[in-house]
Length: 424
Image (cartoon, rainbow, N blue to C red; front, side):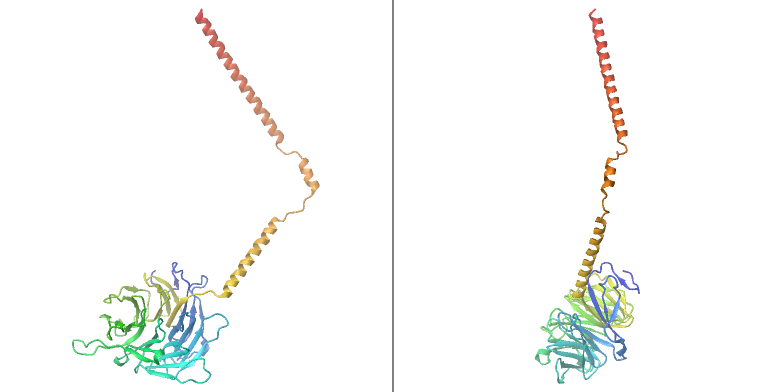
């Protein structure tokens, strides 16, 4: 598909997804590309009138494995729990923290865990009538991102700028105990310390393997079972390769840069990237994969959200959201019970209308016996002509037969006369 600024949906994009987008202005939007009538329609899930300058969406994540609730963090000290269940579920729950901005949210054992930009990890007990004390965990003095492991939800990882804010992993089941801390690379050839800035972290398919990306242009892969230093590394020598976000699945790491480049790396050979995704005109602020890992969604500062096919790099969907998109989530779309019942009612109405039309066609006018008898007694037109034609045909056939018999007799008489002459 060629580069374009218009809203686009590829004809091969048949997967049913719904997308949730957080923007720089604080609006929280819902898009449904699976809708055939309005694939680019947008609905605001937050009250626009209550937004201010500090309402910028800074983090967006699912609160459980079923993906039925979304944890939303803003640049101020309030977080929101937005349920996505059907009718009858509770509304949005707001939770206040002591500091701001919030750079990551996680939920574990009825507790909401927030990563704060000042390097603290705060934990608040939910569903409690009394004000519960907040548990504080120090992860440094500056944090860029906090991410929860989906395979083991009691594990969280943090990363930030500076050697003291490098990759750290904590176990929430053990009262926030630090179980891993990364170690920087050896000094360079001038014996100078290598700069560290873990702008984003992501777990692979296990809680022991973690990937990080940096604004300094490197992507590192750590295995907590082997060593503290990275087991695989990609370092960019190009200017402008400043990685802002990443997401990992299987053997691949997908990274987005501040210059609008989206690249995929294979963990088995990290010397160079294996895929490049096109179509961006602004910095990439967030990435998210669906549950199957086949579709890669991205939020960009050019006010577009996009969906690429992860393996073929084809742009499947592009939509303009009117504000700078900062965070994005994608999940399979589910049909509600109301929609199913409405479809059944529509089918029943259509069947009833068809039956009524058929009944109208079957109904006829009442029969008049005298009128029918009169038509039965009347001779049908064309019978006499048909009889005359049949008589003419019979006479012609008889005449032909008589002529053929005469010819046969004549031929016999000629033969007999010839024989008499020869005998004489």
